[in-house]
Structure formats: C-alpha cells, structure tokens
Length: 269
Image 1 (cartoon, rainbow, N blue to C red):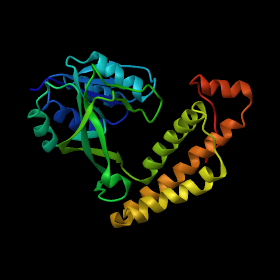
Image 2 (image 1 turned 90 degrees about the vertical axis):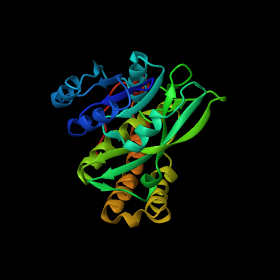
Image 3 (image 1 turned 45 degrees about the horizontal axis):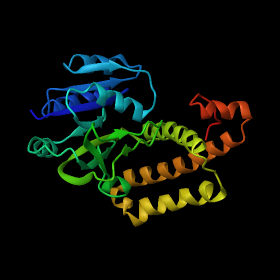
Image 4 (image 1 turned 180 degrees about the vertical axis):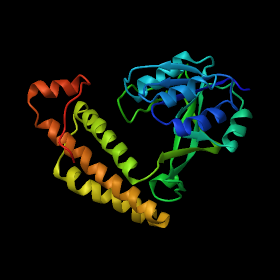
C-alpha cells in the first residue's frame, strides 16, 4: 500500500459505489466515505466495505470533500465521487509514485460513460482533473458547486497514467434531472458572485456551447449519446441563467435567503 487516503463523496449511487470502493482498496488501507444521501443501500454498501464512513449534512461539494480530507490518515489524498472508479492503469501508476515531494499535484484523465456507452468525443471526451494532492498545501474551495482546488503558485502539475471512469448517468432522464439540480446551484452561486443573466447569456451562450460540444469537439461521433449530452448541456446552460434571472427579480427578503445559502423556490424550466 502507498501513503494515500482515498476520499469518496457519496449520495445515491449504491450500484456503482461497490466497484469504486473495491478499486480504492487496491490503492490504500485508508478509504473514507462522506455520505449525505437518503438511500440506505448506499450507506449499507459503504459500511460493509470496511471503510470509515461519516454521515454528514450537505454543506456543498467543497466542504464535504475537505471534511473527508481532514479525517484521512495520510496527507496524500485521492479525491473521487461515488460514481467514479479508478482503473487498473491509474492504480498501478499511483502505486509507483514517489510521494516525497508534496509540492506536486497530479492531473488525471477521465473516461466518461453515458447509459453504458463510453464517450470518446465532445467536452466529455477530453475531460481531466487534478484529483491527487497533498492536503498540507491544497484544499477545496468551499462552494456549493464548481468547487476548485486552491493551489499555491509554487505547486507543480504533473500528468499521470491511467484513468478515472465516470459513470455519469444511466440515460437522458437521469441526466436531465442532475442538470436541473446543478443549474439551480449554479444560479445561486452566480448570484452571490455578482454575475448577471443578460441576453447573451440567456440566448447565445447555450447555442454556442452546443456548437462547440457537438460540432467543433466532434460530439456527433458519439451518436445518439453525443446528441443527448450536447442538447441537455445546452438546455442546462439556458436553465441556469433563467434561474439566475428569477433570483434577480425576487423580493429583497428572498434574495437574502440566497446570499445566506438557504433554499428558494424556482419555476420549472
């Protein structure tokens, strides 16, 4: 085993998390699961795996990931979600790393799956993220969505062999529901950041995003799945700015709820 703790954020992915945990345990003897969902099957699978499980109220992706890193036995953290599975190539690469230099972070390629199909093109086909880092220097920004790692300027980025396989959605309906949820979180974040929902964002950004994903990045080569992904992302882009425009037009007492991370209601989009 290597001096790496695997931190897994889990909610309602009982059908995937067992494979996620199985491969995580090939890397380390320290797997931490931060669980915040309602589904007992997920909690049962996590608890029976021999991992350390912490049931935590939802405070945003960044906050929950930092909670897992704080509970870790080792300073080196591999951060993944419960619908993400490290493959054998990545496991082997991590096992052969030298962990003496904490000023390095590792950028990992992703392979995304949609309804059982591996997506090779579009924005998903070239996806990669920094997910292996030392917690003494690096933490997640504590935002509700679009959390990022805060990297000191002197930290060096390195690529690593292997992939994380992301099992995003079983089909169009599930993907649309996820996108709707993320759109609301994005709108609230944008409002707190002072962004505005202008005509360009509402009408032109969704179309440009579709063309970039489906045409320029060759998403059409993924067949029907490529179309569904590009069309749903386009819909989601418009939806989040529509939600943002609704927030902007709320009475002052309700906009204060948004600023304080509290729930507001939206019209369906």
